[in-house]
Length: 182
Image (cartoon, rainbow, N blue to C red; front, side, top):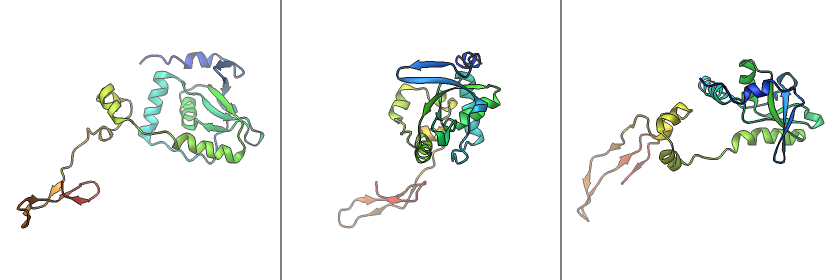
C-alpha cells in the first residue's frame, strides 16, 4: 500500500503550525487537545469503519477537522469525529483543523448538517465515468449500483379485456409490493 501523502507531513508539524488555503486557515492541532461532542449522533458500522480507515491509510488526512473556538465550546470537534477516532487508532497525534466560532445551538446544528446535508449521487455519472468494480472497492454496495441480485417481479395471470380484446396483466414490485399494469 502506498504511504499516505499527507500524514507524514502532519506528524512533523507543531500544533501551532498554520497554513493558508485561500481565506481558510488550516491549523495543525494535537489530538489530545480536541474534545469530541458527547452528543455526536454519528455512528459507523464495522464495514464503514474499515472503509474510512482504508481511506485514511491510503490518502492521509486530507479533509480538515472542524473545531469550535467559541468560549462555550472551546476545542469541541464539530465535524470529523470518526476520522479523528480512527486517526488516533492509527497512531497519529496531530490533525489539520479549521476553526469556527459557534454558540452551543449553532454547534449542534452544524454537527447535524455536516452529516445530513451531503447531497445525492448522480448515478448516470457513476455509470459512465467510473469503473463499477472500483466503486465497490471504494465503498459502494453492489446493490447501490444495480449490480446486486435481481429479484424478478411476480406477474399475475393475463386476462382478456372483454371490451377492447386486449390482454392485461398485473406486475407486483418485489421491493414494495405495489401492483401495477405495465
